[in-house]
Image (cartoon, rainbow, N blue to C red; front, top):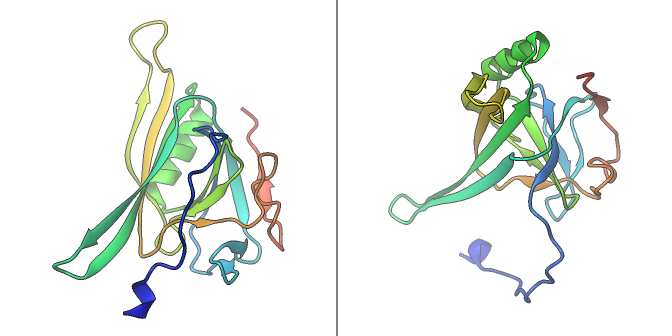
Length: 181
């Protein structure tokens, strides 16, 4: 029973954090595992990783839910990423289709500079999405997509991530593919 005993307390934290995401990085699913340190932080992605960066502004969010059952003796973590991507293009519609067909791993990069690896072992599935023109002049003309992962452990933090570099603390830097609009 000792493996489930807590080992730290927690003080009230300062009010210096902000909500929101500055971007996400998609990684085509690979069975190679990330390297972690003794604290469970990711120190390296699988060798030769290529990540595809999606810059975000506005109404995108990440939520992780703990699912536990005393009756069944199980616990798992549901990871949900909701993205709103502005402007319809043929190229983005193609990428959205490929994201729906696959089950990418996703690095979620917060406005505070933390980066989390979502879908680390099982990948994340696109479970909902829309391609929309909106009805009024101020409506979203673009895409909305929801990705859901279910993992045995919570999303791992990437070691040393900062507000300016999600991969700053990794021992091997991935190849980053940026968008061209």
